[in-house]
Image (cartoon, rainbow over the protein chains, first blue to last red):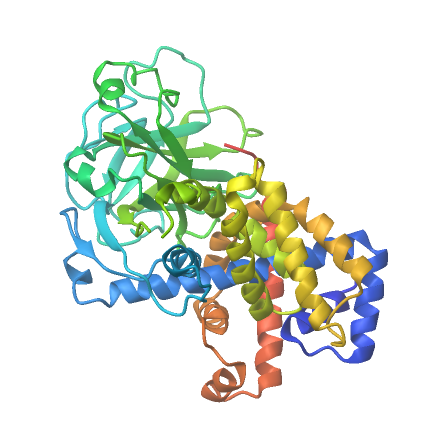
Length: 317
Length: 175
């Protein structure tokens, strides 16, 4: 495609097109489907960068709050600016007064850390597929490691390394291309905080790899499922490695591709609206090798760090 | 005073709106010249969606229809501006944008990794440029640049990001 179109579209975004350039762009868009696709992709990027900037501002505000330094695996309530504050503020205004007003400032919310794991300490992960007790990582073969293969932990001194896409007691000998790890979280102690259906679980994880060869590709994804107590305690979760369809709700991050640069971590994040009847959350993290490679269950240098789950309430109206 | 039963279930509305909010925003953005106008129209859209929610069966097509009309009303008020496309093109862009929601969702997911691939200084600059309240002339002055030089640098960064997310999507296989 003519490189000038990138410049024209970006000048349009910036509002600096001349009359003549605007007419050229308009005529081009009318005739050229690929140009329209490029234009729409730029518009999507424009909106997405605005969202990223907003998210970063919210995180920076959280991190610079007086209590941020005390965050750990323990319970902690904080206040910060929610990311969709404008929408919530407008709806609140409509319900309370019947007068429409635009949201202009932060609305109230509180945040509780459910999990903040940089793999610095804690029990060694199990290699027994899906866990049935909370508080421990389990799944395919993995271990806690320090810096190696040019990869430094995203934070602290340790990270989790995925070793193989199989587990103790696996019955099939077929090599698989997906390494799965799980962790169960008991949320019953905080039931009263989300019993009204107003809470969301925000989750994220960091991924990295050694400098694997060109032609290989790896995708990472994180899921969070909500279960009730009966499903967790009656043995029905142990359905091999597959996800369980008795969940109350499920959400996932997008697919995150690993780059070949050991110096950069890729982070995936997602959000789950928490059903009020939830008793447990199951974290499921999957790393998949591209299927065109020869089948093998080994992972030569793939890492996980900084797994976060927070519970946040949105105000009811 | 209205009773709770007079209002549609707000939690159901919030779930549906949250599910479609980003796609709606991109759709509106595709029809309007600036981010600020798109945000302004989105505020109008959510008001209408909330007010009329109780009578709706299929949220997505209805919400996109409301958003289209709100954007068109806004454009009507601005039609003398050279950055406003003619009506036929606006409708064409809106139709194609609505058909690209999944592709655009995938691109947004790929954006995080593409941002991490940028040199840290470029990543900081582009996020600063998009931060709320940033004025480009002030940002240029702080950086010791002319506004034109800053715009050109941002153009290069955005183009690199777009090429990265497009490239990422062509490589992906679903998990």
